[in-house]
Length: 214
Image (tube, rainbow, N blue to C red; front, side, top):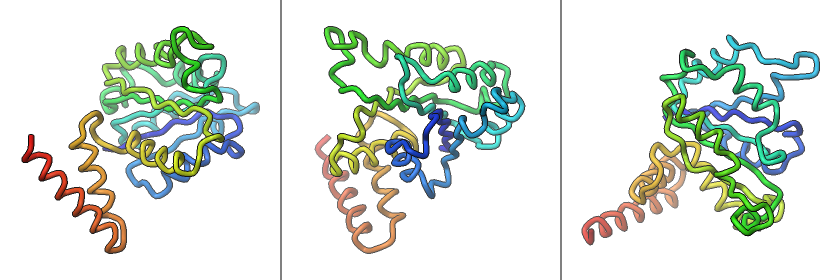
């Protein structure tokens, strides 16, 4: 499955989280990245519908990921303008894309976004318009990928986040242990070195044992 990641972040070059994600996706041939703030500028404060439709069509993406920091409980205005410009049920990419995912970064702790918490609402509630968009376009809406306080994460937590993010963007199916195992096997087999081959074989052996127990 091919994926297009559309990013809106006004200071992406100095954003540690966005640079982390971009580095994670480097070399992923099935992933196309489009940074909206490089297209939209003070000199050209608008998007060209035909150009954006072509970018989506040329990517051959079946999964569209919208990636942004949360500003006042919503996406940055540039992302909203892009959506207003490009989204249409009759657009060339409308039937090409099958899934819509959201990657959102926040500087607030996860527990703040809950009933009774500091913010009172969950991220899913605040970003419900994206779910409505997916429904209107006939796309499957993926669970939101939330990243809270990236700069405070330990190196171990960041390594775990790297794997989870890569899965969210590239894994063909979401939700089952078997699909996750198959994803890890495919990744390990593609890596150079005997160590990765051993890891792939170990996962396969454990997978076979688990399936026998089931």
